[in-house]
Structures are given as C-alpha cells and as structure tokens.
Length: 77
Image: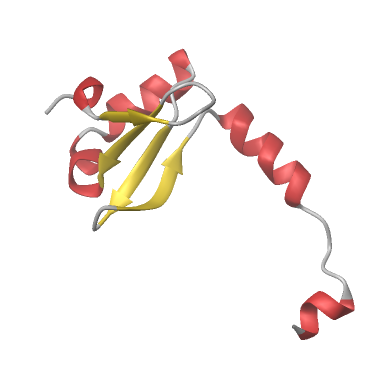
C-alpha cells in the first residue's frame, strides 16, 4: 500500500490514517508530505490513534498553547 492509499478522515481538511507497520516502512514519505505539502497523518497502533506526524508549524503552535506551568491544584490531582 502506498502512503496515498491510506484512509482519510477528519472534519478540518483530510487527515490520513495509517497503521504503524506501514508508517514505519513509509516514514520518509510521510515526513516529506508533512514538510512539503502540509499533510497530517495519524499513526494507528492496533487500530487506535497513537501518534501523529504533522508539519512542524502545527506542532510548535500546539506546544506554545499548551506550555503553561501546572498549578498546585493540578500537581496534586
């Protein structure tokens, strides 16, 4: 199966879903797709979403929104 043959899903654009074994064998193509074409890929482990390959801009934007120190209440929880 080619990377382009993987299932697509998502409500904001199409997000490719691909099993881990296929992702391992297609990693270079997946990274190229993210870097040069903005493709987003969900990696499935045992059929369930486990990780994602996204353009670095998406990852950095997500990290900056979530990178807040924990409150003492959150630490105790």
